[in-house]
View: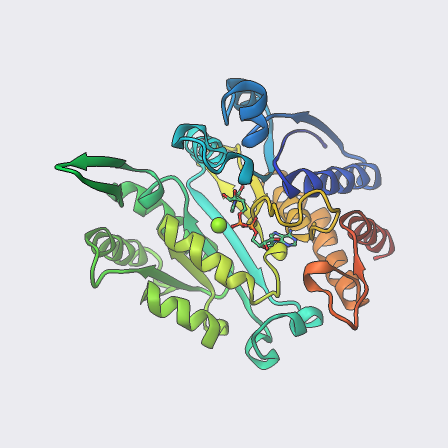
Length: 359
Ligand code: NAI
Ligand code: MG
C-alpha cells in the first residue's frame, strides 16, 4: 500500500514523539511492504517563529494533499504571553476547523501491567475499556463572541457555548455508530440542569437514539460524570460530549491508565482526511530531555493505520507490542518507580519495534 502522510511535529515533546512515530512507521513499511511518503509541515510556536503564523497556508496545503495527518503537540511558555491570534493553540484550533475534524475519539484502556501507577485501586481499573467521543469544532472553544471589553471602567470577558442542531446530531450519530461496534451503550454527558445548549444536546441525543434501538442511551450531568469516572469507570462504554467537557474529562480519564502519555486520539471529518494525535500537550517541563512517553503517539499511529488505511493487522500489531513491552516491566519515566528502571523515549520506541518483530 502506498500512502502520503502529513507530519506536523509542533513544539516541545511533540517533536520527540513524532520522531518515534516516524521510526515506527518506517519499520512497519519495511516489515509489511508498504510505502509511506512523509511530508513535514510547521504548526504552533515553531511556525510562529519562522513564519509569523501558527498555521501557515503551506501546512494546510500539505495536509489537504495527504491521506492522513499526524500531529505531535503545540505550545509552550515562550508563546504564552502572545496575543490570542498569535498563540500556538490557535494553529491547532484553526486546523481542526479547516479540515472539519468534528469527532475526536479518545479511547481509554487500562493496562493491568501498569495499574500500580494509577492512583485508583486495581479492582476499579480491571477491564476498563471506554471511548470518549469529544465534539471538536464547536461549543465553548469556537463560539463567538469570545472577547474582552471595557465599560465604565469595568473590565469583562465573554466566551460563548454555541451549537447548531446538526453539529450535535452528527457527533451523537458518530457515538452511536461506534457503540454498535462495541458494548452498545452511549453515555451522553451534558449540563442540562443549567445550560440551554445542553438541553438541546439532550433532545437531539434522544432523537438519534430512537434510530438505534439496539444501543442503550444514558444521560449524565458532567459534574457527576467527572466523579463516576473515578468511582466506577467500568460502567462506561462510549461517552459523547461537548468540546470543553470532553477535553477535561479525557485528561481525567488518562489517570485510569496511569499517565497522560498513554492516551491516543483520532480526529475524524466527514471527508476521508483524518488527523491523529496524542491527547497530551507539549509538556515543556520535560521537553528536550528524551523522557517523554511515546506510547500515546504510537497508539495514535495504530488508530491511523486502522481508521484511515484499513491496516487492521498492522494496528493490532502495534497495540499488542505496547502491551507486551509493559508486561515485560519496561516503562518510561512517567510510569516508572523505584522498582522499574525508566527508559528514554527512543529506547521505548525501540522496545515496541522489537516486540512487534517478535510477536
Ligand atoms: P501537557 O499535556 O503538555 O502536560 C501535562 C503534564 O503531563 C506535564 O507534567 C507533562 O510532563 C506530563 N506529560 C504530558 N505528556 C507526557 C508524555 N507523553 N510523557 C510523559 N509525561 C507527559 O499539558 P500542559 O502542561 O498543561 O500544557 C503544556 C502546553 O501544551 C501548553 O502550551 C498547552 O497549551 C499545550 N497543549 C497542547 C495540546 C495539543 O497540542 N493538542 C493539548 C494540551 C495542551
Ligand atoms: Mg487537553
